[in-house]
Image: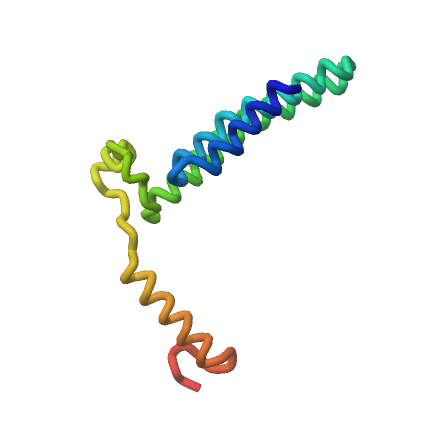
Length: 133
């Protein structure tokens, strides 16, 4: 149980200390998954019942299958919308694999969308966005 708690502590420290979203996700996913697995193994050994061990095994397998996939999807979405990489990053392999087609941050487009939203909120709910009241 202490090994699992130690891995969970390392994951938490990594999430707090790493410089950007992508390295934080790595720390949380890898150490967190290993920590959960160790904690559930300790629970299974402590109770020593087949039902508890089966549940612990199924939960561990579920976590090992879903956590990396979910973080992969979050990472791709963050890269796609232009979340900045840490300045110490030497190579953007995803951008290279996409042929340099990763989207850059759309500050001008986002600012225009924010103005549209602001204009809609100033008009109120009863007015139409086309102005044909």
